[in-house]
Image 1 (cartoon, one colour):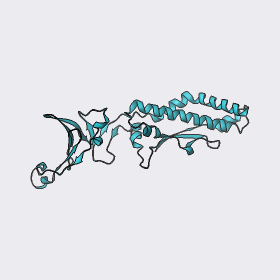
Image 2: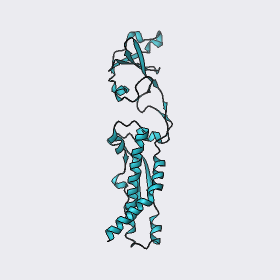
Image 3: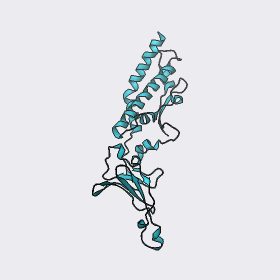
Image 4: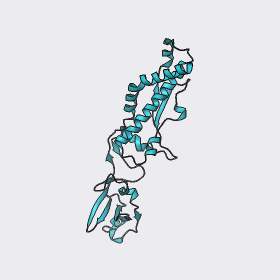
Length: 229
């Protein structure tokens, strides 16, 4: 879980303010912090659309979360905004690796599929959507003699006239498309791919706090004044 907390020195400020009774100031502070947290959450959700090709909008937006217990109260002047994916399987790394990491590595598999000639913006052409199904290994795929005979290529056939050749011995694997008389190399396996640390979660939070703090505290004061009247 990656989270950011916003805090304030409310007790010290309260001593210097005579506009309200002391029991009013904690309410104003907690309300302002919650409003500010909402602005940080909104800004981060918007930022995701600028850096990611988002196909599951609900999943992406719900992953930038403020839990009920993370909200500021009169007793606890702090609000926490976190990355926490919905569902039982936590996959915050889908997002948080773009905060500091400069390299993407496989999560469970032995390698990653790197696009070569594959249409990058078309979801149906991604490896997991090609419906690749395993075929029996061909004896012809065995290489050499003796110990080298254990090297086998496992063949997978998929949609759109695609097939994959995956080697068990760690050699580079490939996904091809049959295009009439030619084979088009769609993907090649790699151990890792470089990524840009562009999530900017912390930077966005700092920017929003600087830009919005005064306005949100003003809104909280106005609401408190209205309630007091």
